[in-house]
Image (cartoon, rainbow, N blue to C red; front, top):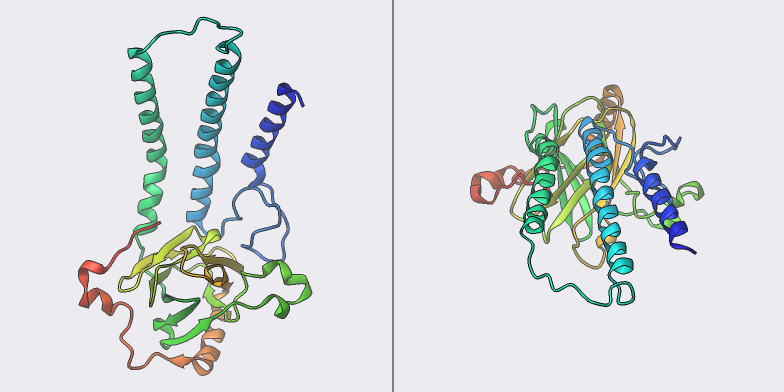
Length: 294
């Protein structure tokens, strides 16, 4: 393969990656990764849509330009300054202009990126008035959930083993939990995240949510799901030998369906009676409470 053919394939791959997430693919399951997928998962919240815009239209072009610029510099060094083409090497030891350029230019690029990324960072942490609060508690190696606004019941969510999945859902192995987190669409959902043993991370890519669950601390995040469907995530903080077996399955439903599910869940799942709520951590250890995105 010639250098020209190699560069042509490289440019084609970069173009595919930049446009890949914008291609609509009809999936039965919303919010799940697809085999050989390029780009981010389809956004299910306004926050994730803005994150995707910054990623696709701000970060990827900048990264592509920088990568190509460095590639050109490398090719110049390889072909112009090799021993055959340049038998007498340059003895230049300092160039003030170049020093200024490679200091100022990256700083300006970072400032430009910050203009778009900082507002999204603050939006993640600036919680609106919640319509619903849930708690996600990480354990080795499963999640448990509480619904303090809807009867304060709790349930565990464990991995569904591959042999237990239907034939048409084998691709969801490591993503499907036995108990789904059911939430209404169009509501501001506050999720309080903590852990009981080591650090875990509650992550749902379609929501644009990725927050650590730290023992003794409470991280808060929020999202507003725009349309019904099933959305998948996983623990995203290395937490032990079964780190990869902590799926997160969220089913988004209408308000009427959610009310019906709550009525059934109050009978099906255990009450959280006599156990201090997660928010009590803020009263007993104020310095330990954190709301930091990762």
